[in-house]
Image 1 (cartoon, protein in one colour):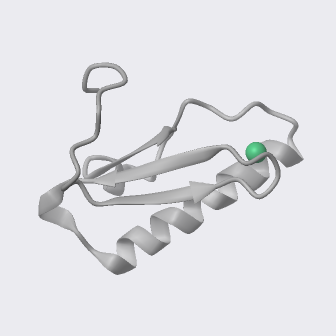
Image 2 (image 1 turned 90 degrees about the horizontal axis):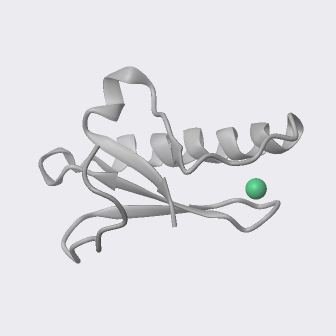
Length: 80
Ligand SMILES: [Zn+2]
């Protein structure tokens, strides 16, 4: 984990996922070295599924969402 709520540099590629139920937004940040459009789509749909699942289980969304282990070294998901 890096620091707290630091400003994201503009050059950082970022995908945004918005919860369809409550409007909570998450940013998926990838390491610059591993930009991969297909992976980023996959991660976005993974995050969207987690958000839907939170509502189904009546859970609060987390501040961060864990990606599957092989991906989380390269990307992070944080509420924005
Ligand atoms: Zn929601």
